[in-house]
Length: 160
Image 1 (cartoon, rainbow, N blue to C red):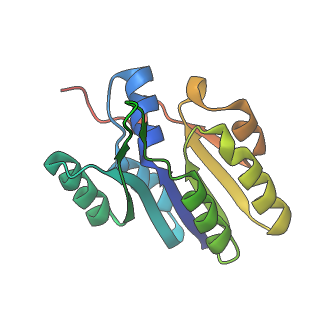
Image 2 (spheres, rainbow, N blue to C red):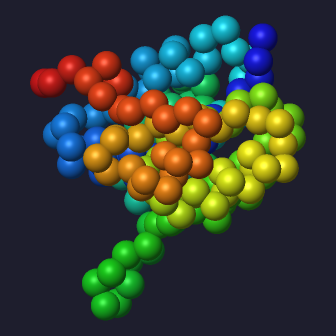
């Protein structure tokens, strides 16, 4: 049985899935697929804390599925811009867990992670799977993945 570490860029998944499908990602189905016949070393979902009850409920759902949820405060700047980026945190965790995993799964379309996957795959005998919305996932990230799995209809919650 291969070991797997899973890293989910929650904000990226939320916005790309909403933009492409006007739906929500089905984390429970994803979990069942990605952990099938695999031993989970770590599973971390990275989100932004806004103090919103609905978001806190969603974060509890992620925990109940099996994810550790890491939260970063949402920062609203005086100029109207905002910040809630987890890229460095995700990169550090991937590097920390790669040595103890056969497979690293990254759920994000962010091209900034291409260099991370290149580094991890060159340092460790590891597979890197990327899940992302095809049309909204950076080509550089797809190229660096050992396997790219498009987020399509089967990974979405039903329409309400």
